[in-house]
Length: 252
Image (cartoon, rainbow, N blue to C red):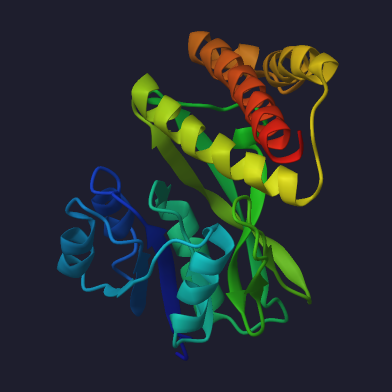
């Protein structure tokens, strides 16, 4: 039976704690591409243990890094995965079915479920999100420094199964990520001419908590859902004050 080939690709930087679990679920792929931003831990060694092709490149934003990885793939189908995402068995079977069955869809969305402090969230927008990750043919990433988007024109569908997003094993890990991402988001906001007023700094974090905890049903995720919602509001607060800080230094 004809089976199309597939390349999986990941961008990394100091992902030794996560990468092996992710790659263990990709061993069935015909090729694994890693674009690494000169990690200082065992990330590259772990990638090579799994037979991945490693490309080292200075980090210039998530969009550019992922576009480099996408262009390095040699096979028809390309699967975009982050280093802290793990495919479950149902999703793997769904992807393998696509490779065997010829159909009109050339792009597929994957459902992602959030794992926070060891708990898998069944509720919340993070656990109901569908993200375009499997493509065939022409596709490109936006060049955003953060929150890049994989773009594709044509018929698409949604795969059965989930990828588990296991990014925050400790509060320290969350704070580290928060600091890095709020800085990148602040730069992105300023490039688009955005700034936040004092009123917005007061209101936006409060609304973020209400949205996450009540509207997105994170209260059904137990105590961890409460913590996640509070930290999400803190994320918005830090992003707003960073934008104001940089804006004031640059324009005042």
